[in-house]
Structure formats: C-alpha cells, structure tokens
Amino acid sequence: MADDDKEKAQGEEKKKKPMLLFIIIGVVVLALCGGGAYFFLFSGPSDEEIAKEIEQEQGEVARPVKKEAPKVGVMYPMDPFVVNLADPKARHFVKATIILELANDDVKEEADKLLPKIRNDIILLLSSQTLEDVITMEGKIRLRDAIMARVTRILGEDSVRNVYFSSFVVQ
Image 1 (cartoon, rainbow, N blue to C red):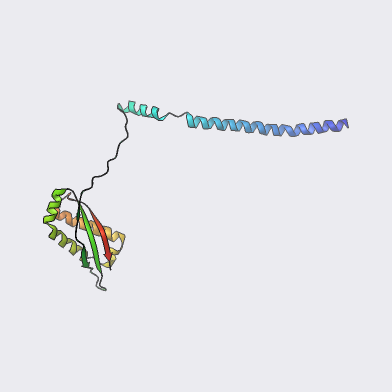
Image 2 (cartoon, rainbow, N blue to C red; image 1 turned 90 degrees about the vertical axis):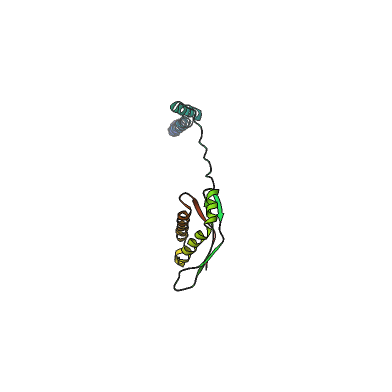
C-alpha cells in the first residue's frame, strides 16, 4: 500500500509539471504582449514634439492652413426656354430654366445689354439637340458646357464661371 501511495504521488507530480509549465509560458507571453503594446502606444513622440521639430525645420511657427470657401459669382437667372428638339421620328420638346454664374456686376450689365444674342444662341443650341442627346446625364453635361462656351464667346473670356439648370424637362 505504501508503494501505491508513492506511485500516486509521483503520477500527480508528473501531471502538475506540464500544467505549471503552461501557466509560466502564458504569464511570460502576456507580459511580452503588454510590454510591446506599451512601447508602441506610449513611446512615440507627442504632437507637441512633432510641432516643435517642424517649427525648427521651417524656422517659423507651423499653423494649420484655413481653406477659404470659393467666392460665388453673380447669379443671372434667365427666363425659361421651351424649344422643339431636332427629332425626325417624333415630336419632343425641352423646357429648361438656366442660371448663369457671372464673374462680377460689370459682366452682368454687359449680359443685360446682350441678352437677346445670348438667348438666341441658347435657343439654337437647344433646338439642335435630339432626345438621345439630352436624356442622359452626360448629354446634359455636354449641353451645359456648350452653353457656357457660347455665352463666354459673347461676353468674353473669364466672364462666365458656371451654368446651372434650375429646371430641365424633356417630353
């Protein structure tokens, strides 16, 4: 019986050794992970140190750059255009209300004087389009660019900033 007790004690000792080894390895791994996390999170330079380095390199105080919103030009709304489209197979028309964004008030005064010429060119351009030309988004963008080019040709370079459709109906 004494031999049985000795064998049991030796068997339990053998079972405890691997368990103790796994516990020690687990604690070591956790300690290494914690140390690595601390090193990566807290050992880098602070924002103040980075700003001082930049300041020394540039010789001046580094300040954030403020972006200004682009200035909006003078809006010039036009009366709606209603024209037939150049479709040989069917009768379609387009109704478009256009707003011109002009560079300044002087250009607006010039646009008032030349309004009949501007409207004429836009009407001719719109009536030369087909349904397939104006029904897609790309077609509308091409039309807007063409209107801008024609109005710019009448009013002069750098006079028109953009062209907007406030309504656009095709039937």
